[in-house]
Length: 300
Image (cartoon, rainbow, N blue to C red; front, side, top):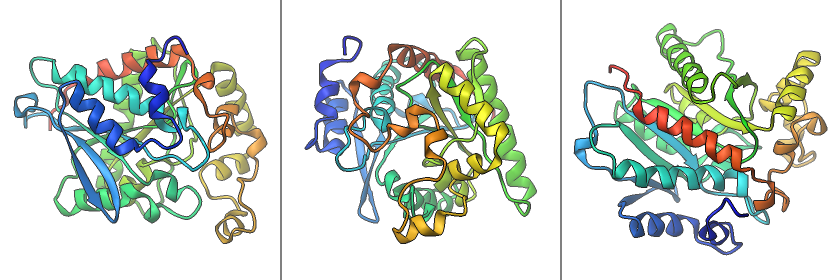
């Protein structure tokens, strides 16, 4: 595609070692990174200068998974977001002053989609965060951000027994995330139920996290109407539908209500999740979101 760099095709090629590709690409552009191995998963932590951080403000931990399912290019799930964060890392490394951004590319996100959050690679990462007392970060997860022009903030339902302190911190992050999207997209954004990504791992470990994705406007509007019509669709999207035990056992591998989900999501895990499915508007809007996020400093 004309708006994508040639190297993007190499990144989504079938036999690419994506962990090595990200680290090599970053290093070629002057950015160092570390590989964090946890439970046989390889997470990539971008290294910025100490001068980029100020303890008076919250750290913004920005996450995108780089793994993909077998036999799918994974262009939107999740190569597009990976590429945007890689380019953003280079931009931030050359940016004077503070930004308080921590970027992590995670491994093993796809493992938890059908079995449970503890299978996700990010769960071990979030567990380490919790053990080290890193619970005051703003965690932003970007997943499937390469198609469409409407940023979507994932709607999260927390249980009735959620501790009040956690609920307060999460609501604060959620409200600020809405303000972020409103500013970056000139008010054209939505909150909708979205399949859990790595945000689920952080939430399960008691760390507030939000997930941001993109959808074409027509798909987002139709999906919003479908959600209002049938609560079961939301349950299916959030992995809570009654067929889940059958899916976990392997007797029923697809989501119920799949045909009523946005087309963008139905491309996931297929060969159709390719470069041709991506749209230039997504990259432009995501650039705005990341720029605003870098500039936003919240007192710790």
